[in-house]
Length: 366
Image (tube, rainbow, N blue to C red; front, side, top):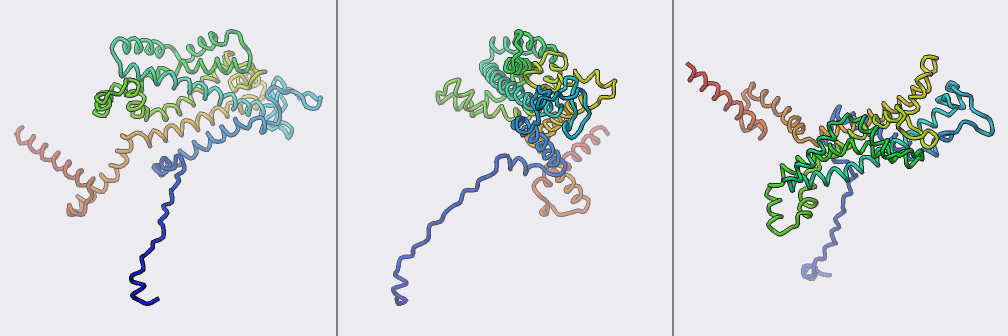
């Protein structure tokens, strides 16, 4: 083919394929952390991941059943110290402590999941309705939630647990009663957070625009307002999950938890280990207590890390801190304004304005 023919030949470009980048869920949130905050988030996520893994695969990990006190027709020795057969020893009921701790993680996960889901399902819609509609309904709901919030949390959990359980000792009845008892504690918290945020945004322009276009009240609340008032809920959920562990342990310790033969519970095991401490038997109480501490610590670390990442006020402070230092250094070295960043220029202008105001005030006073 000659050169003129090549010039007249139509140019065919290969199709350009744009590959979609699939981001790992939560990766952007992780990249927003740095330094000690990232370490805190990693440690917290690691502890929570171990807790969830143990809870899900408890029947496969535990060497014995949750209430098993014999194997191959041979009864376990009560209060036996840690050994190769029983890594965490045995309890006063001749049960394997390691198995009780592992199955206790499953019970705690069930109670936390049920209680937090129920709290969100009840508290968030009530907060939306109360904050958006207002008037008499808002006053009644606020009064009712404040009355519940004024109760001591543990006392309220005990009363609700007794009412819901109704003498049932089954595994489902005990878990449900504990979950409902914890739900009664957290519903006012979600209600107040969502209600106050709804009151703050219900007169925003985007809400007025939706109202003008003829959108229904339900659509405005759950389509336009809900996404803008629930940004702080992940932090509250994480912190409440750790507090739910402590509340569940307190109920079990006081004897209002779950039947020990139906489900393992760390608080109940701590109660039975009280008499062992004076006899030098430490393993029956130290391992359930350590499990509670580690799980609560992991959830708290995750919650605090998320708060520092999602809180816009904390993000602004962290962003302005390096700019403040750089601006001060530039001013001391008489760096030209053209070499400063926008944040440093704003800081220099604010500092100069403050100096002018102070000098003007001194002149007036003189």
